[in-house]
Amino acid sequence: MLLTVTRTFSYQSHFEWNKHKSRRLLYL
Image (cartoon, rainbow, N blue to C red; front, side, top):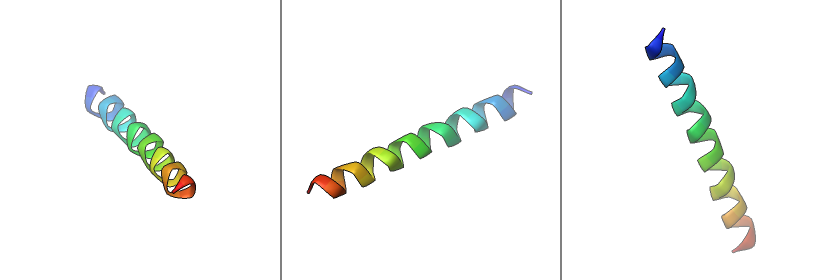
């Protein structure tokens, strides 16, 4: 159970980071 939650959280964090990265690329 804990592993699943951690995995989901990690995936969400990765998605947010990718979004931020793409935004920075857009501004560049």
